[in-house]
Amino acid sequence: MNDAFVMNSWGKEKNADELIMVGDGNGDLTKAIGLEMDGSGFGLGTRSQRYAMIVNDGILEQLFLEAPGEFEVSKAEHVLAAL
Image (tube, rainbow, N blue to C red; front, side):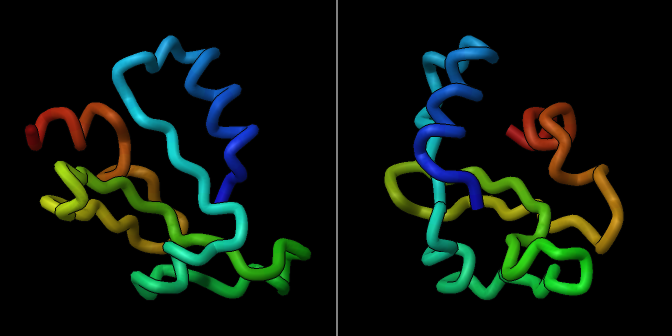
């Protein structure tokens, strides 16, 4: 649930000129799609679950939702292989 400033900086650092880097600072999207989690036990408050998605023209084509504590299906290599 990074804000627009974090996303802009991350995009510049990674030379992601062909991507639209979108933040969700208030967690509105995360809540709307039901992927928020309670991280208050770790001092994090409401956070987003780890996922990646492919969206074309505003239509969700694929969602890669990680199991808790994992980092496999949302990796760039995995998502790009699905294209």
